Length: 312
Image (cartoon, rainbow, N blue to C red; front, side, top):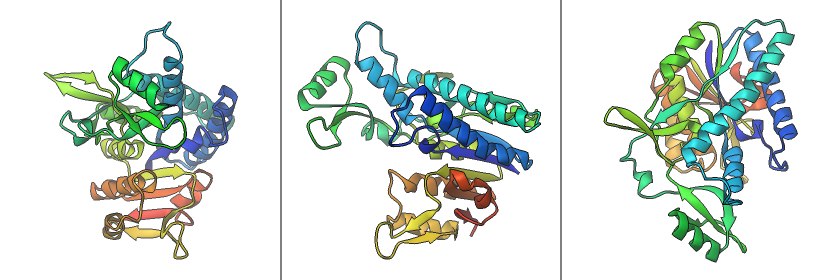
């Protein structure tokens, strides 16, 4: 089958880690071992990934010095797409060569079109970058024009917040589809893609963060994938999370998933976008959307674990 596989943040950086090069490489290597097994089964793959910690680290580096000019957020997205794409194509390529599988792995810097009229631009909510105390937060706002909000507790609760617009289309989806037809495994749309808006027939970068799961769904639509496989750090989607009534879901229809979303069963900051992405994918003709843990990707694809969103 043709799969779009979305690697969650845990595939690159775990909560207890600092994010050193060695840590990230080992995490990517393990993720590529799991993904490589899907390739060895004959599936066609497009990979996408998160980049939140990496963008945050670069933003922190930029904030720590005035010696080097800062780059806008959309450029940081491009930088991290290149960084992570390189590691994935290197490590997955190594795995495949060791397994005797002759398939090229290619990473593509990917733009995602958004609308300037998206309501998130008038009400940004996505926190990024370092934390500040109140006086430093005001200074950053005055000097750089960033929107700052109190999003945490303690002595440094303020962070920059940016828009998180809906993805409209993957600009390079035809190029990705062509590379798949050539037999390549493609890494694309990392971190939700680089947000761009269309102006007078041209694309311009804009500072925003697109939800990576919703962008993965657009990518899956654009390349005609049969399955959207979202790999994260939990085995399945749950209802009643954290209560005595907590229950794992193994198979739900689009209608049931939409009902549970409307009930607020899936938080916006965690499982909500994943379920929404699966629903949209199936509604646009996909065979199924799957949410599962990275370590159980094959079992989830076969229906032995994970949560499958199917038509109905």
